[in-house]
Amino acid sequence: SQQGEEDPQALSIQEGENATMNCSYKTSINNLQWYRQNSGRGLVHLILIRSNEREKHSGRLRVTLDTSKKSSSLLITASRAADTASYFCATFTSGTYKYIFGTGTRLKVLA
Amino acid sequence: GAVVSQHPSWVICKSGTSVKIECRSLDFQATTMFWYRQFPKQSLMLMATSNEGSKATYEQGVEKDKFLINHASLTLSTLTVTSAHPEDSSFYICSARDIGVSGQPQHFGDGTRLSIL
View 1 (cartoon, rainbow over the protein chains, first blue to last red):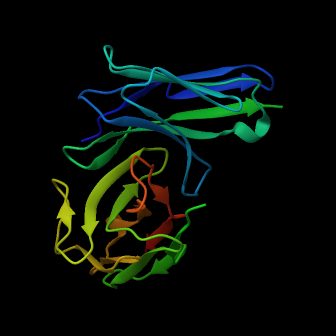
View 2 (view 1 turned 120 degrees about the vertical axis):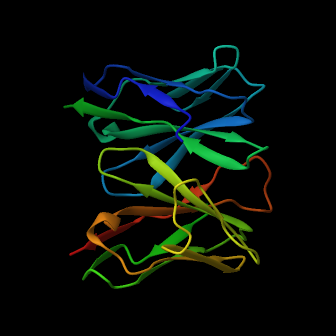
């Protein structure tokens, strides 16, 4: 079964605005990753954050992880129309050696 | 960067046909590959974990005889949808991890869109 729940399910913003997506999970994890998927394509890895890390940055992306709340957030700053895609979190637990994906957030950035 | 090639990218075939999908890691070795299924506007559902040289591990509810997985080498895993029916129509995506690099994310193929008529 899917472990991660993401909200919002869909988000529509204007170009230049920030977009925040949240992911919650149920069990202990080793790391959490965020992926992007353009329509009809495979997934592109964005950021990996380990369980002992609280925040990571990569360009316009900022990811936070709160293991006490079992939640993570992805912030995209100064969004662009090209950021329009679906974004998924995925958790990895070494005990199960599996990646479990969240339900995803469909982001639409309007030019 | 690490590249995973998935082939074919699109298949349309008649009901009852068996379809084979290949997943190759092009520039790294992968003892483990994963097969996912994705319905429109939904998330990826893990179907099975493909292990090189041994049997695949299937998730609950996934029919082993329906979805045959073979991981014959460190760079190739195949998923065969046997006697496919319209309800098998979906987007199938594979991924692989580089065994030589610890703590790294999985790398995804571009997916295969399967349409059964």
